Length: 165
Image (cartoon, rainbow, N blue to C red):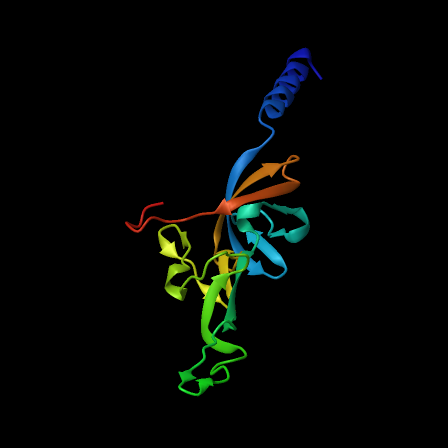
């Protein structure tokens, strides 16, 4: 190997070391187990090489229905012969209230709305879905690390309403 060839190899190694990571776009091709396809030249990326960040992991808030009981209703009647016994005693059920767990005030269902990318997030099975898990067809942005041995999934890719990205 000539000196020029050795210098060329050293320059390539130095250039590679200065770029330890790069961005990659991909499409989720399977949700469970997770698989992401980047392009036709790469193999499908499977769960063991994918590192998920918080924005792509399912996150939900419970929305609970609870009941209020009113137990302070009592009254008496008076008549010329004296007071009668209390007219109301015990507990009385009020209307259902829909509130987020830990909320200090009663909220109506229409008040509980969270938005993502300008659209209201769904309420499913008693939960507001803040971050849904990755689903087939989702476009994602990733960072390639460890010489392409691992991929950090940063976020879903959103398209604007005008059709651009």
